[in-house]
Length: 219
Image (cartoon, rainbow, N blue to C red; front, side, top):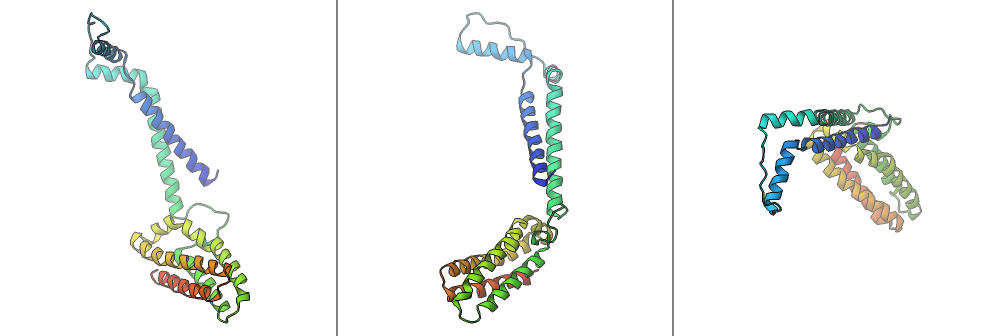
């Protein structure tokens, strides 16, 4: 069973449990329902005679409700506890990188420092390609940016919750602040390549490299 399927089942159990608890937890006992009905009749003046209303004592009402709803309500409560506990364990395992993956060497399964180092390596290569003014290289730069986005940036962003757990919220905010600036400049460089704007592509790569370097220096 995949991680996504496990999460889906856990959440469904919680939803079913909430539904059962809500349905049977609010169930009225026969006497209480009878009393409510009489009060409604009195309010609407649908009867000249006022039937005698018998109100159950609180303890008696709880006992009667329990005899009618104990099994479904307890089952719903169990599903809530079991489903939420299962979902929490899955999330904890995911954030700590304990979920097995068929791509064990992908950037998504590496620590933040290694992922940023991969980005820097690619950006250095792009900077070297753009050292000399040669618009013919823009297509190659565009392809490398697309590969960088797919192989490194996207997995890095998708794993941000796990990274946050590893490096702490304060460092995470600082690191991702610089990284986000770099990512925007990388996207701008890609657009410049499409537009065949060599100078803008070069400047964007240079700025992106500095931003990623700043993010890496915080780790």
